[in-house]
Image (cartoon, rainbow, N blue to C red):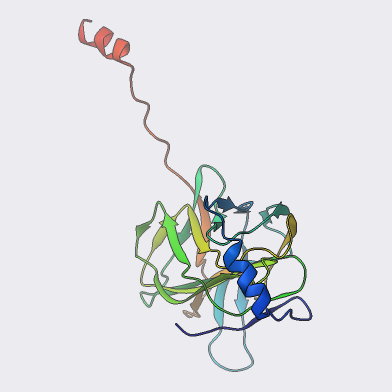
Length: 236
């Protein structure tokens, strides 16, 4: 596995051999699943982006920090063996819809960082990404990176996907195994991002404007008659 060095929010903290030894000793027998507050996307900003060179891009996105989403800070202690779950989701009753405007496919990318005190992430974890309630084209990962920092002070993920057609999903779930225990308990985490935009559906200019990604309402689930209701209907 390629080793990534990630410096997060200020001066890095270098892990010493003593800290690593303590990390191994501190691994808990009962690992926990730590679900951080979800990022609920409530609206997407549309943009025709004109780079200094190359083809213009159609974008629908949010920027963190900014508007178009809700979430909340949280406090947690990360221990070796835990699994951190980061979730980017549509509001209840809605889904993200990606639109392939000209048959060439679109891209989806996001960069989400929960940060506390200054720290360094010296290696990547085996993060897994799940598109919940996915229909249509299956996103193909070109880059998946997720990790917690060496002292458990930061949680970071960055993913890029090519989407070869129209697709819908209700949420993206990223699971990140924790390989280092926190150097202190009850770390306060704040949401941030190192990418602009932070969550974006994008496609090359197609000769006219068009929406690449939006929020759509889910079809209501048909009501199922109760057993008593079915019996009444049968004997009418």
